[in-house]
Length: 125
Image (cartoon, rainbow, N blue to C red; front, side, top):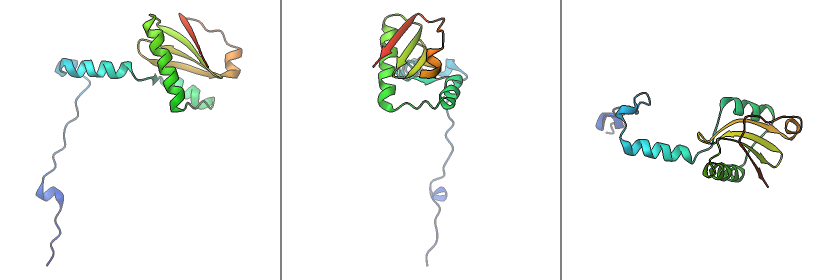
């Protein structure tokens, strides 16, 4: 005689509530510091940048992203706030404090474009 047993019947599974991002007051200083440290090491892409990259067929490999993130770190260490990063045939405007790519363009758009509201430029090979 074999009875089927469901795991939920032996060990009731209670959903664990996820922490809310709405209230920073409930966060411990350690979790805030960890989140800030993690955000400082991650390159984010704005919705606009993601759309432009998709439209223009721009795909970045992990090695390329590492080089770009290192360039953003270097720009941050020099006090830059908005940088033009040129990597091969791709140009990106990056908000350095938030580590966010604001827009991206390929070689064709790069040649016929004027870059304004930047305080630094980094040319990567």
